[in-house]
Amino acid sequence: MVQYTNTHLDASFAALSDVTRRGVLEQLGRAEASITDLAAKFNMTLTGMKKHVGVLEHAGLVTTEKIGRVRTCKIGPRRLEEEMAWIEKYRQLWAARFDELDKVVEELKRKEKVDGRKKRK
Image (cartoon, rainbow, N blue to C red; front, side, top):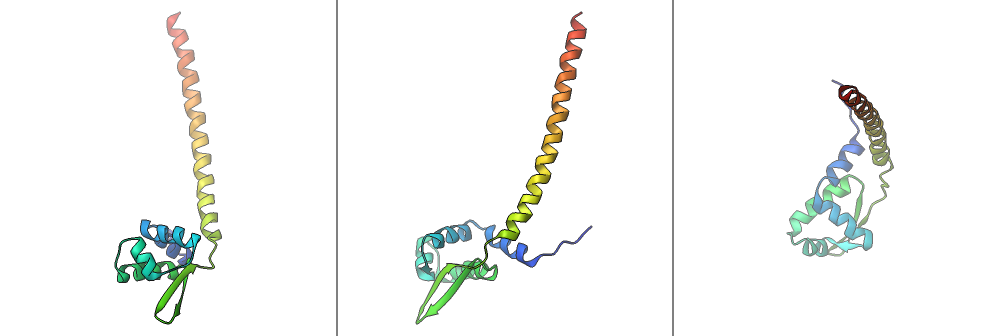
């Protein structure tokens, strides 16, 4: 079995696999927010939100800055180009496979139609 390792992809997909973290990204796409504000918005503890933000920060999807006692979060520098390229590669692969399957189904339908005509005669 081939071992595929790409830490950027692994970190990004792990971060994006959670509904709360996707929600945090959506929220930060609208405006910067403190961890306290995010925790309140998602009805969770500060500790829980810090963990979610930490996963997003590790993936480069979020950056944080501490000013006084407040840690503010904003969208990070990563643009997800590598992830989009990976997804596109597999989208094209599956599209090609489904196109081939469509051809097989159409050929079977055509043969079934021809065979049905032969039986009636």
